[in-house]
Every structure is written in C-alpha cells, then in structure tokens.
Image (cartoon, rainbow over all chains, first blue to last red; front, side):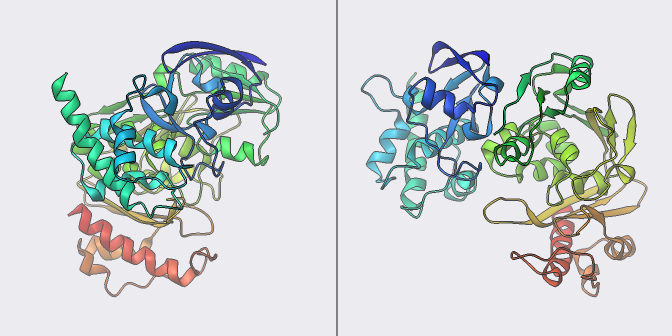
Length: 161
Length: 266
C-alpha cells in the first residue's frame, strides 16, 4: 500500500491504494469519478482516456502510483459549472454520440488533439489522431464533424480571451 | 495484476541499486507494454522501478553528425522535436506512427528497445541506421544488440540510458500497420550513410525479430531508387505466418514497404 497524492480536476487528493492499482481504478473506485470508462482494458479502445499533466493517456495502462505528483483532468473536470466545454457542446450539437460509452474518452482525446494542432485540423488528421479511440455506434462521421466544429469554437474562444 | 511494489528513483544509480534489492524486479518506462503484460498476469515482478521521471534519461540532442535520444523520452517528444524533424525526419516520422497518440505520450524508445517486440517500430531504425545503444555500463552497437524475439544483449539490471544515431545522407521508413494495434505487420527502414553504404532493416516480418535485408541493400547500393527493387525477390523462409498474413504475404510486404521507404527518403 502507498499513499498516492495528486491533483485531480484542480483539487488536491490523496488515496491509500495498493501499488498495483491502475489510475482508472483510483479515479472510479476511490474518487467516484465514474465518467472515465473501462472499455477493452487492453489499451486499444481509449474509453479510459484522461489528461495527465496536459497529455491524453490511457488510464487503464498507467499505475496510480505513476501519476503521483501529477495533475489529472477527467471528463468531470472540463465544463465550467453548467457551461459545457466547447468539445462537449460540439458533440451534442453534431450528434457525435449514440450510446455514449466511448464519449468521455473521445472528448478527452479530441481536446488533446485540438491543443496539439492549435486548431489547424482537417478531417484526415482528425481521423488519424482518433486511431486510439474506438466507437461501435456512430461510424465516426459525426465524431469527426464534432471535433472540427469544436476546433473552430475553441479557436474563437481563445481569440476572445 | 499480481501484487507488486512500486519505486520511483531519481537517478540511474538509485534505480540500479533498487533493482539489485528486488527479488524479481523490473524496470518500468512508459509502461505501454509492461503494464498490459502484468494485467494479463504474464509478468509478475516483485518490484517495478519507474524510470520515466529520471531527468537524466529524458531529452533529444541534435548535433551535426549524430542525434541522441535519451532512453525515457516519449515517442511524442521524438516525433514533435523540430530540430530532429530537420536532421533525421525519417526517425521523427517513425515515432509519429507508433501506436496511437495516448500510447505515444507514455511509451519510450528505451522501453521499446529493451522489450524488443518483433513488430515494434524503433528496432528497425536502430538497426538500419547502425545506432549505438548506451547503457549505464557500456555502449552496444545495434548489430550486437538484438538477439531474437524479446531478447537483447542487455544484462540483468542493465539500463539503456540513450541511443545515438548517426545522421544519414538519406533515410525513410514505411510500415503496413495492423489496423487495431498499429504494430507493424511489416515495416522497413532504409538508410544511406554519408559514406555511401546502404543498410535496410525490416520489423514485423521475421520469426527472429528485426533483421537486415541483404537483397534490398545490394539493389539500393547499386541504384538508390524505388524502381531498383522491381526484380528483387524476398524469400519467405523464416518469416512469420499468422492469421494476419502468411510468410509469402510478408515477404512481398518487405519489398513494397522498402519501395515506399525509398520514395519517402527521396
């Protein structure tokens, strides 16, 4: 057992967990942040994607102990109160989800993509960059549309700041 | 996953000392292979020693004749390094094709080489470029490093600290990725050194891991162009055969990927 201290969604947290505990289980089982999903549990589907120190990672493929001292952002940490994050709003407006299971991971990956490309995105790039996130409902078409829509919204939001 | 004890040393020396104390210790870099393998209970280290936060193991140094990538540098940092994209674009491109973005944010070059998966991308670049693997004990030439499936020249407890690549005159990498895992069904790295030598390495193809491809080297040495490979035939003996592709299919892929790699190299 170790005490793992880290920042989650801007809040300092501390949890006593076994060293073999995965980050996703720390989030879901100890912090009750169940928006982050476990899909395949083999690092392929991306439903468990969160940001660790600003980078998208698969939280089923990282020990909680590895994240000690880091800042983690989950799907619960991106909206501003009742105001959805532009990526969440774009997924809703573009019908970028059906069952919604993959959506938290899709959104966390998509925000990371927009950050890395600074809004300079095209459809082919989005499709390539979403290779680590699997959706079995939508056929991806509206997800890609949502990411491109959000990229321009985030650019506008950034310019306004 | 079986129970284990996690350690986070702050230096290579401390990591080596911890390794010596553990009953069945393992080094953990990005963890993109080791953690899945531990989850499947195919590995059950008593201790995992995290190398990812050791500062002396992270960074990319681009010089005139060589490029040095420190062992715990994530693939994303290699792929997005502006100086490297200029000096050795084929290597930055290779790093950008490993796994998916989340995997590239965690996975490291040292972890990839120490694991030596027969379908990993980096071993092909290391072998084709004739890189040198630096460890906490010594320097190992690429030709002496890879010892077959998941086997390397590394001794128990030895840590890769950096990989030094000579900057080539020309180099290119092309792979046919497995559509789900993005591992190379076959990937080929071609390199022409500044002295005019040609070295070609294929990953994902051979039953014994990454390999040089003599027939393609000879053809490209005589004529560095994709067309030079038109009449080359790669023997299928010794190549992998599985549900994703037969040995004959992979033999042909080696040639096709080599042609694409030469085209990319220019």
